[in-house]
Length: 544
Ligand code: FAE
Image 1 (tube, rainbow, N blue to C red):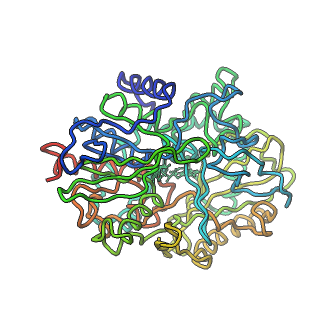
Image 2: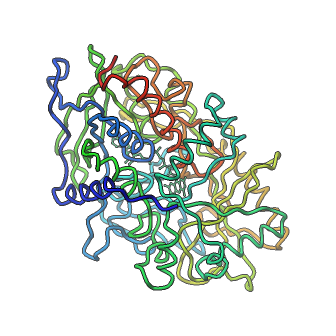
Image 3: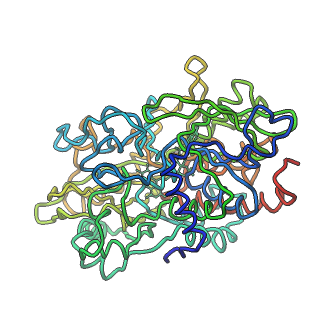
C-alpha cells in the first residue's frame, strides 16, 4: 500500500525544508511557564528521540491538540552535500556515514580477510552510530527519523503465538486487527511484485538463497518493506534515480525509502503543533515538586562541541530515544537521584533479538549477481521449528562484482538478557552482556545453516567478519528492552511511580520479538498512545 500523502504530510515536508534552511536549533515554545518551570523553556509535551516510537507519540499528541517539542540528538537529513546527495553510499562512505568517527565501522569488516571495506572519514554527526559495549556493539540510526534512516526497511509482523508469549498482557486480537494495520498504513508498507522479483537481476541473490533453502526443506517468505518497490522498478528501468539499486542503505537512502521524516514525522509537523529541535541531546531528567518534568539538553555543533545547554520543562515527557538511549536516561536518573523512585526493573530485560550474521560460499555455477538491491525482500522462516526457531533475512551484499556469497541476518530465540548499569566515574551507562550469552543464537543459526550447507554441499565464509569467524555474534541491529512493558512501566508504557512520564520505543519489548522489530515498535506505540491520550490526557496536557 502507498501511504496517502495528505495535505498535512505535504505541509510537514515543507516545514522540514524550512527547518533545514533555517538551521533549526531552537528549543520550542517558551510560552505557558508555570512557577515551577520559571528557569526552563516549556512545552506541554516533550518527546526525546525521533525514531519509530517517538514519531508515533509526536503525531498522536499533536492530533490531540497538544503542542509537542521533539528533541533529537542527530541532524535533519535533507541538505545535499557537494555531490548533490543527502546521503553517501555504502561503497563510498564519507563524513556523512558515521556518528563522529575517524574511520567507518561497517558490520562486514573484511573481504577475503583484507581490510578493504572500511574507509577513513572526517568526524561529523553522521547517520549511523555503532555504540560499542565490551562484548556487544549496537548499530543505531542518528537523525530525524532515527533507525528509519539506516535500516533495511523490512516491516515484518511477528507470529501471533510469539507476540503473545513475549507480551502476554496485550490484547493480541486488537494488535493484529487494529494496531498492526494502522502502523503498516502509516509507514507505507508494500510488497515486491512477485513477477518482477522472479525476473529481475537485482534479486538473483535472493532466488539463489531460496533455492538452497528449499533443497534443505525450508520455507521462504516475501518480507514487506517500507522501501517503495514501484520506485525500485523504475530505478531498474532507468526511469528514476537509483538508490536501493545504487548500494545505498546503512548510510541512508537518497530515494525510495519511506523513512519516518516522510511519513509519521511529516504528518506530525503538518499539524503545526510539533517542533523538532535537532542536535539536541537530552542528558538528564528531573521532576519538579508540581509533578512536571525538566529535561537538560546539550546542543552540539557539527564538530560535536556543546554550544548550549538548555532546560526544557514539560507536563508530559515521552521517552523515545531507543532501547539504549531511553534506558540510559532512566538508569542515570535513578542512580544519580534525579528520579530516585524508578523501579529496579529499569535497565533490565535487554536483548539483541537473537541477531547473528553469517555467510555461505556458493558453487561457481550458482552466481548471485554483481547487481543486488540493498533492500531485503525474502526471509527463511523456520520459526515454527521447536528445537531451533530461526527467522533469517536473506541479506544483500552489493559489491558491484560477482562474489558467490549468500549473506544472512538470522533472528533467533535467545533467552539470555543483559542489564544496563550506571558507571558513576564516566557518567555513562554500560551494557552488561557477556559473549557467551550469544551461544544460544549461534547454535540455532548454525543448526539452520548447517542444514542448508549439507543439502547444497556448500560451506561457510570465514573472511568477512574478522577473526576467521563464520558467525558474527558481536553486534546487533535490533536492540530491545531495558524498560520492559509491565515491569519497569505499567501495561501501557507509563513509567512506574512517575505520572506523566512515558516510554514509547523498543525498550518496552523484552529483548526478543522473533522478527525485525520496527513494525512491532510502531504498532505497540500506537496502542499505548491511544490509551494514554484517552485516559491521561482527556482533559489536556497537565499532569493530573
Ligand atoms: P530509534 O529508531 O533507534 O530512534 C531513537 C532516536 O533517539 C534516534 O534518532 C537517536 O538519535 C535519538 N536519541 C537517542 N538518545 C537521545 C538523547 N539522549 N537525546 C536526544 N535524542 C536521542 O528507536 N528493523 C526492522 O524492523 N527492519 C529492518 O529491516 C531493520 N534493519 C536495520 C538495519 C540497520 C543497519 C539498523 C541499525 C537497524 C535496523 N532495524 C531494522 C532496527 C530498527 O531500525 C530499530 O528497531 C528501530 O529503529 C528502533 O526504533 P525506536 O523507536 O526504538
